[in-house]
Amino acid sequence: MVSHKLVPYWFRLRETYDTDNYWNLSDITSHRDEFNHDSIVNGLDDFFDQYYGDIDEDDDRNRTFEVDSYEADGNAIEGEIKLGEYGIEADVYDTQQSQRIPRHRRSHHSEETPFYFTVLGN
Image 1 (cartoon, rainbow, N blue to C red):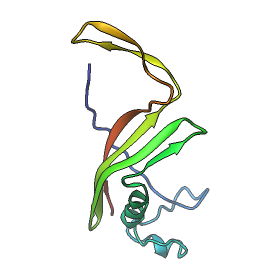
Image 2 (cartoon, rainbow, N blue to C red):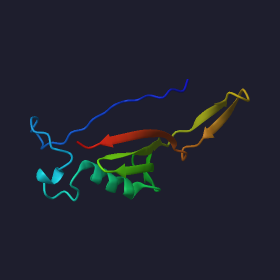
Image 3 (cartoon, rainbow, N blue to C red):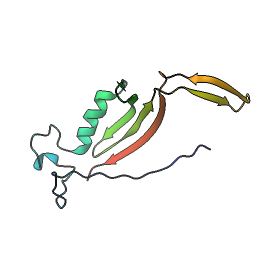
Image 4 (cartoon, rainbow, N blue to C red):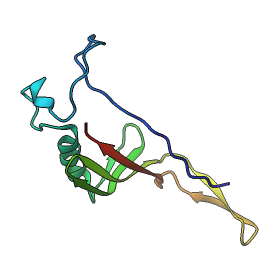
């Protein structure tokens, strides 16, 4: 059965071992001036731009990564990334034809799972 799930996550940045002082994600440079971006949304926008339209293949871990779509607007960014794994051959069962297709998925095929995201700065 196919299902869609909404799984909320949040992330916070802080100095290593400083469990009490989390950074303001809208003003990262006030905590560390060596960052090239002033907010987490701007940093993610730059990161997603580097991977947009390109599929990154990690041969060591047999994984793929792609930013399929994204849009940054002010203090928010949303879109879809795809993560995939390859290296395993598998049969496929066609439920409409009621037949199994042996070894349909080859070891060089990456089964991709889409993840939709929204990030809001503070």
